[in-house]
Amino acid sequence: QAQLVESGGGLAQTGDSLRLSCVATGRSGSPSVMAWFRQAPGQEEKSVIGAVWIDGHTEHADSVKGRFTLSRDNTKLFLQMNNLKPADTGVYYCATRYWLGSPKYSAPDDYSDWGQGTQVTVSS
Figure 1 (cartoon, rainbow, N blue to C red):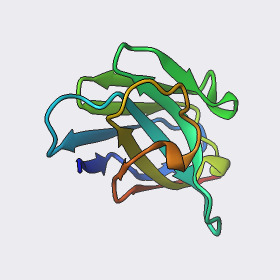
Figure 2 (cartoon, rainbow, N blue to C red; figure 1 turned 30 degrees about the horizontal axis):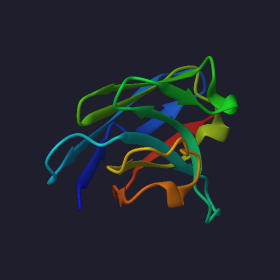
Figure 3 (cartoon, rainbow, N blue to C red; figure 1 turned 180 degrees about the vertical axis):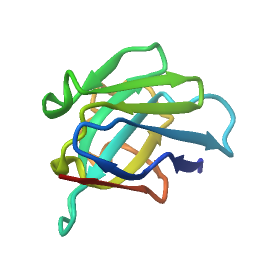
Figure 4 (spheres, rainbow, N blue to C red; figure 1 turned 45 degrees about the horizontal axis):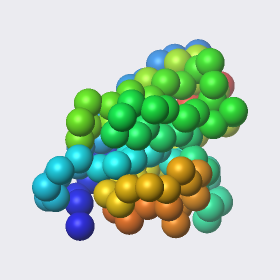
């Protein structure tokens, strides 16, 4: 099982930018897919922000298109968040999977490994 460590969260004001990072270690090879999820305050569900496949294919949730950008460098995943809003507040989780052949990416069950999360708080 891979170990994932997120970093880069913190406090921000509306309109600010933050960059989150995630590093996957502990398994040979690169994850087939790496993704970011957000868990909003008081919510149990995690919502996908986006995902990047090993071949570079990238998907972004409609809610963040134009503001957030995912990128990846092998076993490192990044999330550039611009023009932050209070609704972006939450715990951001990095997730990975190593099996191939599935186009699914938006559900937590699509992934096998998770980080501990990093808190992002955006004030108005």
